[in-house]
Image (cartoon, rainbow, N blue to C red):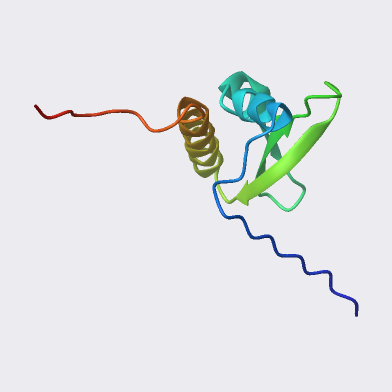
Length: 96
């Protein structure tokens, strides 16, 4: 068996590319997601590929539709937060 292992190190935060930002914005929109039922009875969450609208990329499998929808909601929320913080942290309080 052959394994491929790669590490990266940075002296500062890695810079986010425009392609990554575009993907995050795409994933933060729930209309780009769907749930399909598999032959084994599980439900799979998928998002629509950016480059090919006929292709869906599988993400997770859950036992129930509710579990799958919760997984999508959490993923949408996760990527929405990533998009929000692209320009740096939000100031929540200042002192005088």
